[in-house]
Image 1: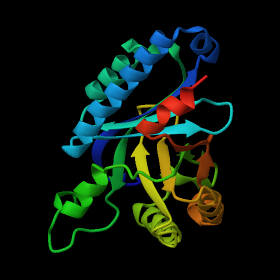
Image 2: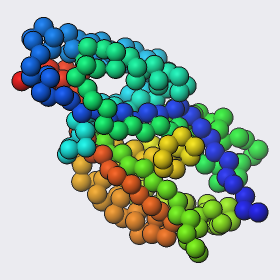
Image 3: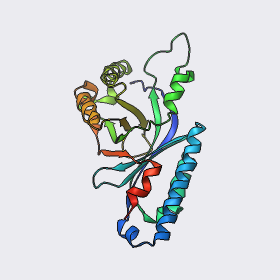
Length: 249
């Protein structure tokens, strides 16, 4: 029987994409719009306090294209907290003008493919905890996409020996390290949580780096033979102070 790899799991993640009901927004009174803006600003301020306490993290980006208008990403220690955040946004004055477009539920994940060094559990290391409970970077651009490992014929990821899977992933990681300082990545596991097996969230200062890293990684065997990829959401950062200008009509 093929050995499954043990995973290290950190904060739970929710990607929440919303479309703005622009018609209703335009028809709203100035007071209604001001109250909605204040409600969103208050939520962001609340989330910032949680992030400063290192008890979670969040991101807000404007989506490019027609799939959605806004992309929220939330990280919290429990799924109940994610549900509360989603519900709180829905109940807010701004929530009256937001239409759910898409969502993705997962958990920050690292795999234990490498053996322990000196008998030390890697999950206990500070650097590992920082990756499992990351503070999301405040970079200009964000990309999100889901992916699976192929299970067809001779290209079945789940029939490969653990050592072979680890080797392929190590080679894959070397490609990623070429983009150090240019792209930051958060991998989240979603087997049993959502429709795909993993979520990949990338951050960059230059949006073109997304195209470069994804294209180059497609040539790694772990992707070319065993990778299946879904839709892409691309966004540019929406700072709290820039929200009024973005929603001005």
